[in-house]
Image (tube, rainbow, N blue to C red; front, side):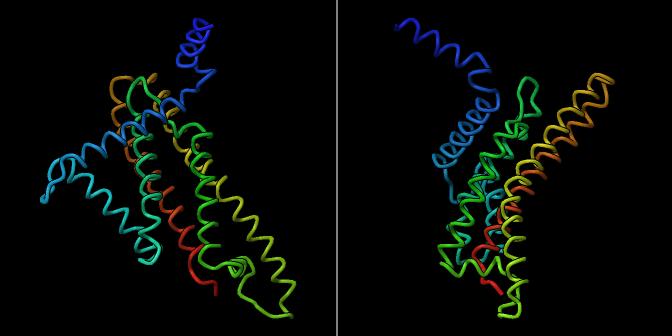
Length: 230
């Protein structure tokens, strides 16, 4: 039985049908981020330099984005989640540019595993901040008996719109990253000497932009959930 268990465990790590490549690459991205965090923590300096300086600049920009979009009252408590999302997507996207590796974000399951928690968390914070009055966000601008039909229509439109959000987050990132990989592959076959270098530069830009887009939309969803309904 012990021998069979060892065989099954070995097969799980080798056979992508048991553990898909996107899962192993997602774990690898997580390990890299943990190592980077521990490295920066272990060598903190009052005057940052090197890797610490790079990480501080990167994180300060995401913090500024959260502060400007959500507001200081809630941005600091939501920042760890938002920054983690950004760093994970960024590193996963960039990993796809390395030969022999793939971007975990080019798999729809990885993206859904991030989009669904975003959906649950911003609604949770909306209920936490407003309580039952969070429903006002779904009823539109009219609050009167005469406007009841419009309120009902707006409620269903808003509900559909909110449930579509995790789908659009998932599909947008999946489509862009998959399209980038296909383009790199095709152009690499057509002209392996020149074009791939140019496309790799474009791929770098796409990787950063898509991480920012996902993070910006997540931040906007949180901002809309915690703000007062008008």
